Image (cartoon, rainbow, N blue to C red; front, side, top):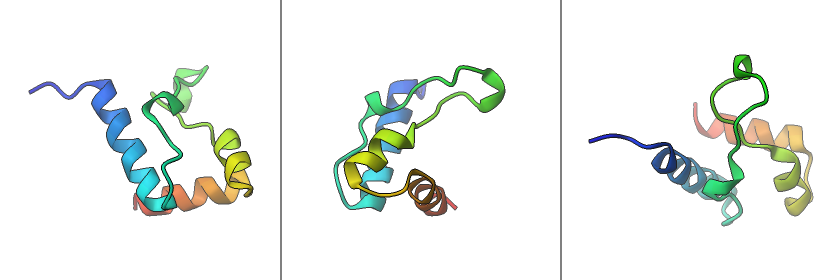
Amino acid sequence: MIYTLEQLKEELAAAINTTLKQAIATPASFVFPPDTSLGDLSLPCFALAKELQTNPVSLAQRICESFT
């Protein structure tokens, strides 16, 4: 079975939504970074933080901690 990028995005969005206890992240939320040295896929937290009325850095830390 081939694991597609869309499947990965769907699973990541679901995990983030579980962490945040809100359906806020979607597969479309993920983008390709402008520089490949920054990784293969990214989630810009500024828009999500604005919607949640929180600091983007603390939001990013919260999401990262849920994956470790």
